[in-house]
Length: 98
View 1 (tube, helix red, strand yellow):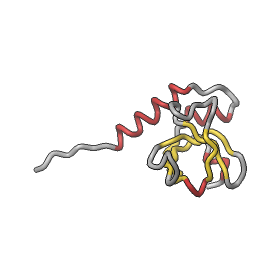
View 2 (cartoon, helix red, strand yellow):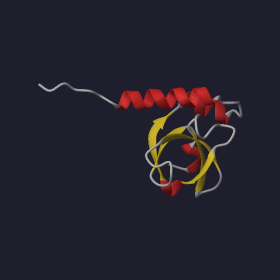
View 3 (cartoon, one colour):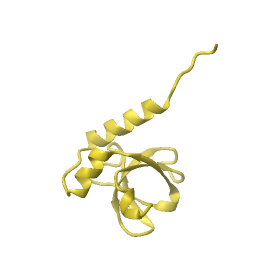
View 4 (cartoon, helix red, strand yellow):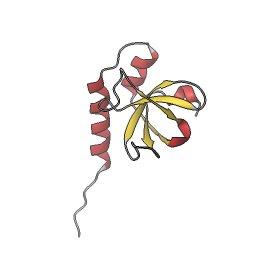
């Protein structure tokens, strides 16, 4: 996957204060750094600069957000937050003991 393809993908932070938190890649700086946002602590107006090697970039893509970013249009913090909340809730599956 090239760096340009990272935009709009969900990434899990592997290190730092935000370790274990999910973000969406919202910008590419160079081959080593990207901008990430969670719509809450790291807003779209002030995304976090993070090394790619400190992220686990998933194959999960927020296509609507990706299309808006590539078109140069504004993405709201609530849109990012809602996508990440949906993603987190869909990962947790409760199975009763049989």
